[in-house]
Length: 176
Image (tube, rainbow, N blue to C red; front, side, top):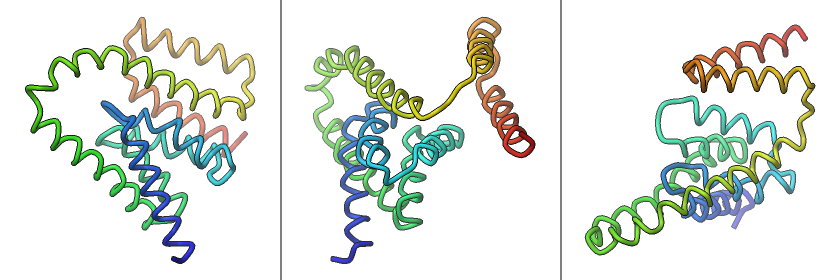
């Protein structure tokens, strides 16, 4: 098997495996993708963060960021491999859940409260790994705190906050 084909199979397999940890969205995939491609240096933390940001910004499911990961790893075939990797466990899981719906209700009710803590832990691990490579000035900490307070207390629209932050980031990059 050629190295390109083996990379596509690897992408499909890792994404399919990580999808098993993605209850309610793609957040469970963060730590697995980071551990497999970012930590060894195959994918830069910047591209990983960029794919995640764009995936959460565009319409559609939260797990759409994996298409960006696949694209950065292997171009359009990598993005397609990611989409197939997401689809296989999702289709099988949804089919089984629909078939066994009545039998699974009480197990799902038991599992859902704990799943939030597991996913939050995986997101924290991925976020910490990215943050270790970033240098943040004290003024930036203050700005982030003010923005969080604005979103929480003043009910600022998070979409507007993200757009404004992206615009400021572009300006700082271009003129800073």
